[in-house]
Image (cartoon, rainbow, N blue to C red; front, side, top):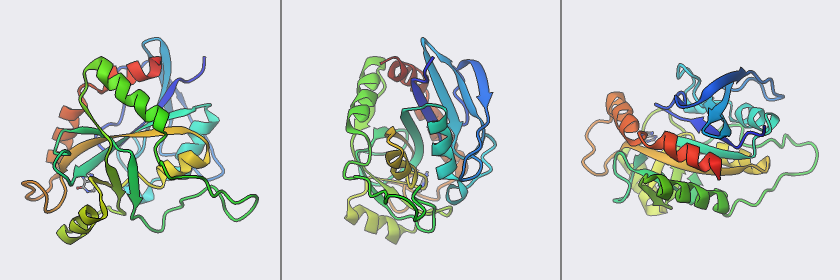
Length: 246
Ligand code: HPA
């Protein structure tokens, strides 16, 4: 049976508890090892794969994740659709803590990451990336959210920063001027690599905190981040199951 959907979990989402009959598959890739095994199991009627982006013990910081190996492993497993869960900070008003959002744009501020499968040999991979998230798949995510009653903000611009430190107030002010609504450290190069592999890819951003200098942000603590991610993620199993069905 085909894998209907793969989910890449971010900070605070290290497993899909609702997966049943889970089989673990370890993949080797030309780019090295992925962050961990693919956990493949049943969710309702569908087969769903889960990968913890940072490793299941959160050993890998955002700039050390082997994004190429992760995407390549999913491709090897026969995955065609990827729902990326990304924990983020909120910049603009509609994106406060505990909001779920399905962005439609991104700006890449990362540097020094392996951001392409093209290593200079073979045909150049200048993939179209005007719409970085697959528009049809995004609409399926939003439709699944409507069916299950999860509130998901439609659209927004995700700014991908290098991390692992959080941003300065001035960096966030610049990102706001650039048009970013959300800030996270893992959105790129993942989305670009997915496009190079021809995968349908959408992001479900989980707002954990106000970004530096926004809202009532004081100091951003890991405890606050994890508490807000847990609260915002409550409806995710139903949403993912509905998405996998359709
Ligand atoms: N900035 C960048 N990444 C994040 C943040 C943030 O404020 N919160 C969670 N991930």
